[in-house]
Image (cartoon, rainbow, N blue to C red; front, side, top):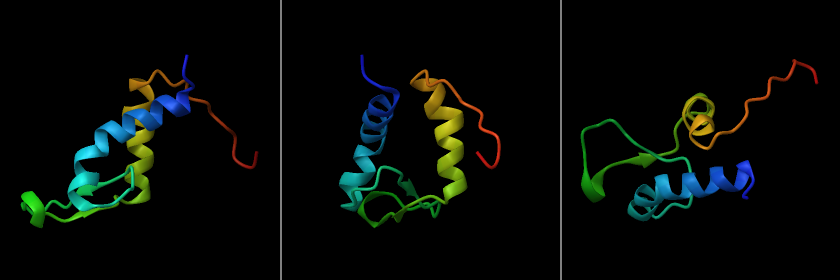
Length: 75
């Protein structure tokens, strides 16, 4: 059985494959700018860190059945 990290990377690779191919970038976390453009002229950028964290915790973790661990500040 694959680890949670391996599953997460595989899912992110599949989810971002189209945008990576279109933009020529290798980043796993890409998003289209919401400027209404589509096709090769569309802007594809990295989302802000808070968006990445939210998507990982709220969408990806449940999808790959990742157990959420709570850590106290300062540990």
